[in-house]
Image (cartoon, rainbow, N blue to C red):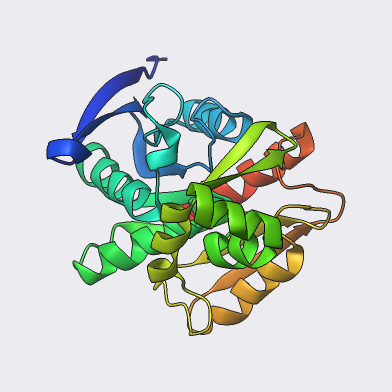
Length: 260
């Protein structure tokens, strides 16, 4: 059997002071390919991203993953990150690296970016996305899951210092900037119908402490015109990175790819 290789790429995005070079991993294979969008301050070598790559390798499916600016192999200052900036990067990688139809798999913030990316693609007449798989979707997170949950002291720190540090169960404290919060408002989706024009599969942990399951149910209630399914993992947390969680994700992604 021919070994399908994974290639490391560098992709230039932006101009002038906003120019940066993204680290991208591309595995050749059949279509529809799998396009990975990670979460806030996550990297492409995380458990779910590497599980997706193993799935692609095992079934001969193309896989594309990358690190946002400020993260992982791409590097840079994470505090400069915004939804607009990371969405621009997702658009660039999708346009320049992927070929043919794709199943877009987004985790947490990456699920929000997946929906925004599909909106941008649809507006340009690009119909290559065959399905969206959204894991613990943190849609509108800068508003609903960050700003609205700030204590008075955190709100004051945000205005005074331009950023606030929040403890994280997954490592170093999270840097949340005033710029991130202000930028996120223009990308909020909830409050009006969400139209994707492709099947949507949501996977959520019932014990998720970061993105309450009610938030995922709210997204589901906005998908009024598209085929949508919801898988609730009764004992799952936000990461959904246990072996049994990864098998569930792989099963759903493979079904989405085969249907596409």
